[in-house]
Image (cartoon, rainbow, N blue to C red; front, top):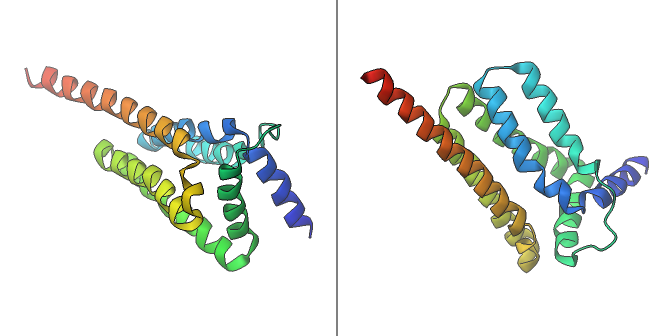
Length: 166
């Protein structure tokens, strides 16, 4: 019973939009530390990212659509079998992204980030119907942020290659 109380408390705070918009920033920081091959930075950033859902107060007003999506996520995490599957699925993403950047593959890392961000919306639509559109704002923010920084880094990398070849 105590676990469900803690889960309810956490998800009430996770309904705060700030907890959704902060996630892409953590993904960029994770990619940075993976690229630098800094285990300490990866672990600290991952722990901060996972705890960020409870950093903000519960909102005074809640989007019914986002509440439906998060209720479904909470239900998945409430049952041992689906919780293990959900967490394993998330870890596959984090490890895949980390491995791509660890190997200095910006392009593969960006593909993994894009597929995951878009996949979260697609999965939300499949599992919660039209309510799945609720996270589209923070997903677009994440896509713009990740791809904008990725584009700048790839451009910088290409300039450096050109300068070395001359």
